[in-house]
Amino acid sequence: MDIVVENLTKLYGAQRAVDNISFRVKTGEILGFLGPNGAGKTTTMKAITTYLNPTEGSVSVGNFTIHDNPDEVKRSIGYLPENNPLYSDMMVIDYLKFVAELQGIEPKKIKERIREMIQTTGLDDEKHKKISELSKGYKQRVGLAQALIHDPQVLILDEPTSGLDPNQIVEIRELIKKIGREKTVILSSHILAEVEATCDRILIINKGKIVADGTARELRKKSEGQEILKVKIEDGDKNEVFKAIQTLECVGTVDFIKEEDNAFEVQSKPELTCRKPIFKLCVDKGWTLTEMTPIETKLEDIFRDLTMN
Image (cartoon, rainbow, N blue to C red; front, side, top):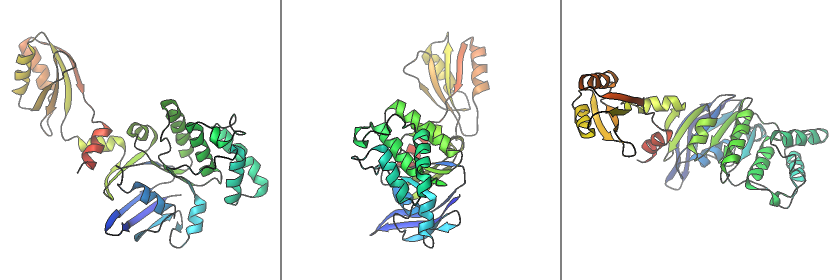
């Protein structure tokens, strides 16, 4: 099922938590939904899940809209909010049975669905434990199991790896990627490496507005107006090398890389490349060029540039 958000706006008094945003998430796509605290991510996800009514605009999930068919939208979605909705005094298997009944699964199919969810989320050794006895990682697995138990076509996951250790993050990430092959997924996270490793596409929101939309590679390409190279040159005095690089017509800026000797960060002028001029400079000066590596723009840098204003 596709998710289509059109001109979505949510006001809280005079504050625009979400400001006229539109986007589509295609079936089988995992969308990484990024933004600083207060950017409007959770509000948008709550509107998609019918948890709250937008002030303006509409959302459709498949053929259903949140205004005309809210119950059908809810049946189509599995939702894991940031605060995992678990009953800590219940055993895992009893909680999943309770959720299955709430979701209207046929009684004769409930046992099989619970069995499938326990296998899918790796809860077999924990299924007879009280939820309060579980680690944070296993509680997140239970949260995913409750979101998946009615076999929804759409998954909305708000900070699914919040508070997990690195090993647990990898496990949940792989689980989401596996699930995402068959379902439409929106995943919100503050862990940018996780989003890049998990998601097919990234949407960045800031102050209620969409400021970027594309794959990680596309976002990098858009942000790269200038080539940045790490250059290591041996045999020459580093100050002499620095000044010589500065004289090249293609060079915008040069900086020493403090952690390494005879290493420089060279930023080219827009639309120019310095690779051949630097190589020729070293040949002319009799210097040894031991490294010339493009420095890729980090997703963290792109995120900061787009959300610091």
